[in-house]
Amino acid sequence: MKRIRVKPGKGQSTAGFIGGLLFVLLGIFVVIPTFGAFGLVWTLVAAVICGVNAVNAFSDKGVASHEILIDEDEERLSGQPAESRGDPAERLEKLRELYERRLITEEEYQKRRAEILDEL
Image (tube, rainbow, N blue to C red):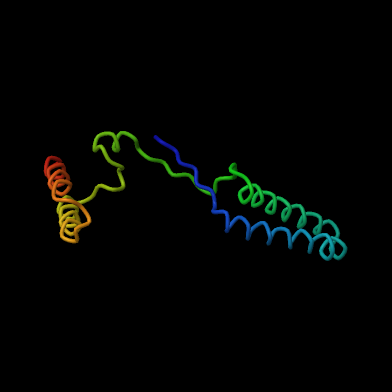
């Protein structure tokens, strides 16, 4: 299995950082003085959120939000990514449409058509 770790985009992380920073400031100046221990917990959680988003926004390293697993055996057998395969009839129709719209050459069309038909 091949693992691909995906982290949020820079824009999303920057927005999370700014929001987290606002909650930290709110915690320091309002929630801690008003609610005591609860305010301290609030501020610490906001600081963690702010920190994680800062790392994702301002560095190449970061915390992944989710992970994608790819079965390499399926990919190797077909010679193409597993998610790109589908019903051969649909693939042939899509290929024909690409050729008719002049997005691929006749040679490319014939080659891919033969590959799809060989899989049957």
